[in-house]
Length: 101
Image 1 (cartoon, rainbow, N blue to C red):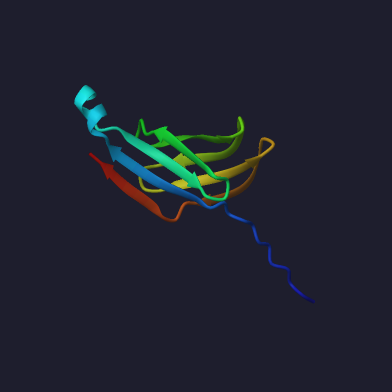
Image 2: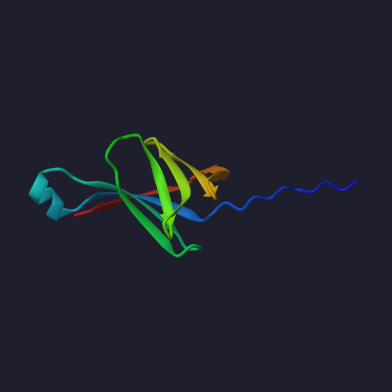
């Protein structure tokens, strides 16, 4: 008897936390932070303002919710969504930090 391995494809989503931006800092006195999700496979980048240490939301493709994200300051859990149903779940393993002047 042969065992079949269940292989789920985890989308190639990378996460960068971007801090800074001198123009915004000069106007507001606050360094803005953004979550930047990028998928080479989907040829898509999502840039979302980080408003709290813990934040969750959705990423859309062509107006349809495709992913849910749950960011807690230390990591980011992702869920893929197909036709409103969660079809996969994973944790982004590597988060990049980018500082801008």
